[in-house]
Image (cartoon, rainbow, N blue to C red; front, side, top):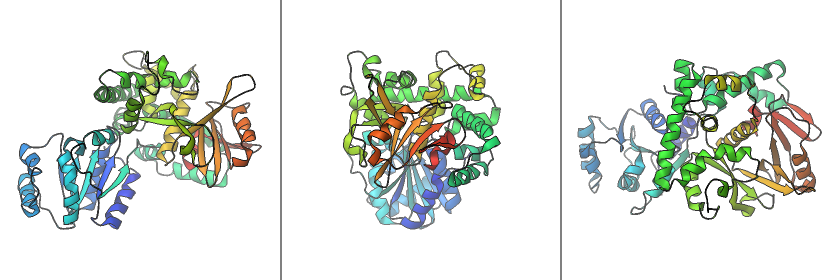
Length: 441
């Protein structure tokens, strides 16, 4: 099934404003929908298109890229091999899985300069970075990132185009939803369980069976772990990924490498973690030593929390102690009755929501009077001030970490937020936001 994606409008803007002066590179994790999106755009926006999938391309088409010195001849041969007629400034050529054919990516420079047609490339950022050793990386690229489908896109997939816009209006007037809040939270929990991978959403729509959805998500996780073994054949990346739920549960304030891998620390596995982040299957939130605007200036690259880029995959990873996740677990999660601390799931969801709306992820910890740590889960920079965020999985009684942080750095604070599962309200200077308001920050 083809789903509506927000990035489509950015692609349309690229076509309109760049008018062939750059190729479009869509990067993202495996199975996030890059190829489907590129094909949908080509069908809708061009008179004709040619799709070249370098994971499944004929030998004759593959060999065309060995010599592009004569572009007239190149295009004529391409038309003959594909049976597709190309029209000047009305056709697009898609290079799918471009990382598998580095020389084709290098050719983009000359194809764009020729100006006859548009070009769309898709690929995994990790693989793209790994396969550029012997080529000239083209500067004639406009790059867009495709993330898992967000909560609004999930609503669209369900055929609901009204609810999310209504939520936005409630956010703008800063009012609680009242009796509608419980329904929205149930919708959000369903989104958390299914996740934003198009294949998982399609399975849910076709079967309405969360165990079938779980099977799909397990296949995607296995695919990721196969990719991780290509990153590092010692298996460290796969182990680090599998341990994400337990690491978030232990509230250690950082991902503790040594508790997952023997005789390893953050510095030893820095390159592996960087490659995992480039694969866009994980998200990293870095600790800020001195919370202030310009947070990257004081981030500690060896102290971080790790999240799964899709919360639906996170849920499957968290309950992966059997060959399948029982429907009873999904049912209890959906009804909010599972006897477990679900704070780590909501924290992962907030990280995903913040990242997909263009925010880098940062957090801060500092000691209490009793040698424990206060922790602000996320920090946003707005204007010349900070907006600290504390995440809770249920109602709240206190928010000591948030209060202590705002007291310590009072001159640097703009707005303060508690993100939780209850309806909107204010508590003094703190705005208490239901989780579904997170993307509006």
